[in-house]
Length: 487
Image (cartoon, rainbow, N blue to C red; front, top):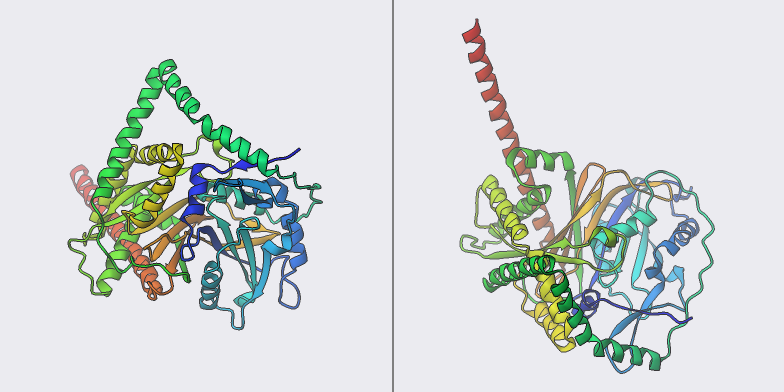
C-alpha cells in the first residue's frame, strides 16, 4: 500500500521562506548532568543514546519521513524515507578543554549555521561531550515545516522522561511504505486543485447551516485581520538589528528564576509573557542606547507567535500557529510603565482576535497557489517587524534523557530576511530560559544584547521588590495606628 501526505500551507511556507541565508530550522540547546550516558573515560555512550532514541522513534513517525515533490509541480508531500539511517541524524562531537559555556555557544552557532539537507528527514540531534564538570550537551535542529513550538514540545515529551528511568525497550519493526508513482501524485494534485471551488462552496454552506457560529468566527477574523494590517501599515524604524542577513549564526543564552518572573507579574500586573516581553523591550532599549541610537521616536515591532491549536489538535505534528504584531515601547524609560504598555498591547491584540485574523489572511492566500507564493515572498522581504519573540509554554517538572537530568534548556528561533536576532523563552522546573539566535555579521555584539535583557529584567524585579516593600511599610503603619487607637 503506497502512502504520502501533503504538507499544509503553513508548513509549506517555511520551505519557501528558506534561502541560503535564512535557515528555517528551529530547535534548542540543552545541558545535562553526566548520568548513565557518561563513560569512565569522560565520553558518552553513543550506542546507548542511539538505542534509547530508536526505542521511541515510532511515536514520532514524521522523523522517518522526508520531503518529496509532485512531478511537474512544486507541491511538497511527506513520504517515508526508504533509506532512513538513525546514525545520520544522531551526531557526536566533543569540545576541547576546558569545555566552558563560551566554547559551547560558539559550537552551537556553527551547528545552527548549517542548513538541513532536503533529501533526508529534516532533523539532527548533536551530542556534545567535554563540557566542564562532566556535563554534556544536546543541540537539536528541526525544520520549521515539521514543528512549531507546541509540536516541538511534544517531541521533548517523547525523548525526555519525568523520571530517571533509562530503560531501553526493543523498538517495533519499521518498514517504509512505498512512494506512489509520479502519475498517481500528479492525478491526486490535479483533483485537489480542481476540488478547491467545492471546498469553498462547502464553507459557504456551513455559513448557511450554522449562521451564528460562522458569522461570529468571520467577525472575529475580520476584526483581527484589520488590527494586524493597521499595525503593519505603521512601518517600523530601521535599527541595528535589521539589515541583510548572512548564513552564519551566533548563539547565546541565560536563565533566571521563574518565581522572580511571577513575583513581578503578581506585584506589577500583566502575565508571565508580558514580563518577558517587557524585559526584552527594556533590553533592546538599553542595547540601542549603548550603540548610540536615539530611541525617542523609534517604532519597534515584534512578532509574537500564538498557538491556535484546538484541544483535539494538541498532539499533531507540523504548524498550527498564528501571531501578534506588537509595537513594543522602547521609547519608555521607566520599567514599570514599559510593562504596563506591553500589557495593554497584548490585551488589545487578544481582544481584537489578531492571531485569528492573521490565520484567516493566511488561509485566504493559501486557497490560490499563485497568491500563496506571492504572500510568502512579500512576507519574507517586506516584513513589518524588527524582532521575533517566541514564548514557549514550559514543563513544570524536571526532564531526563536516558536517566540524565536536563540542567538547562534554551530554545533557538530562526532568523528571517533582514533580521539580526530572534529570541525564544522556555520554562522548566522553576527556571526560565532565554535563547538568542543572532546573525554573525549583523550582530557581533549579541552578548551585549543578552546582558542588556538580563539587566532589564533585574530592573523590573527590583521595581517589584520596592513596590512590595512600600506595601509592607504601609501595612505596618496602618497596624500601628490601629494599635494606638485601641490601646
